[in-house]
Amino acid sequence: MILGNARPNGHITPCEECPLRRVPCLREFSPEELEFVKRFKIDELHVEPGASFLTEGTRSEHLYTILEGWAFRYKVLDDGRRQILNFALPADMVGLQGAVMEEMEHSVEALTPLTLCILPRRRLYELYSQYPTLAFDITWLAAREEKMLEEHLVSIGRRSALERVAYVLLHVYGRAKELGMVRDNVVAFPFTQQHLSDALGLSLVHTNKTLKRLIATKAIRWQGRQFEMLNGAVLDQIAGSGYSGQKNRPFI
Image 1 (cartoon, rainbow, N blue to C red):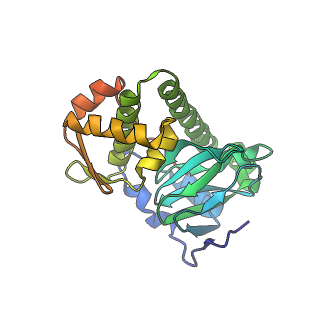
Image 2: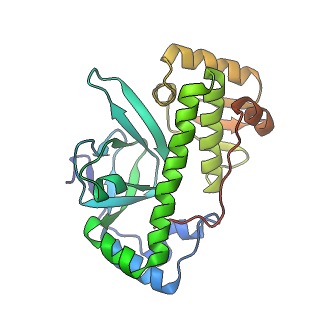
């Protein structure tokens, strides 16, 4: 299903020229894997900011790899309250749940203009049966998603408000830095305090006050959408858990 504010790109980035292949933290494909991925990818989709291209309760015929842009996974309660589960960045896969289970249990919304590689669900069996290294990669991506959700649950359940804010900012900054999106310790964060509030289970007022306390430590600076890391060690100490990335991690 293509939404009104999501449309095919009309231009497909050749897999050989994929900008993600130049990112040092992402592993290289073998020639055989690259040939399959070229066949696996059938199109690209452009999604406007604010559009949900995967929705809870539906089963998707496709799964997607984020080529460019930011998105977030979320659930909405009957009364309209929203819980953001995590943020998705380039090289992340979204829609796997809806492709292998009966239906999506969450929705995914674009934070910025988003370009997605479209991968058909019907070819997953071929991938798993003929390309075990790529099959392991998808399993690794699912396990990584589980790990991020575990940390998110720890934050919601046990971390203080200050620790929660410090942890999520440290985590997202670390992921962006891995992907080469940080310049001189500065990265453009496309999310607002409301998004942060919905991710951390705090009211907007509480989030705002907590963020001011964190800024007062001089560990970070956040003005508009520009986030600057001033003292990573202090932020790490407040969060109580550092960001541990992994080199040569997979993507499809």
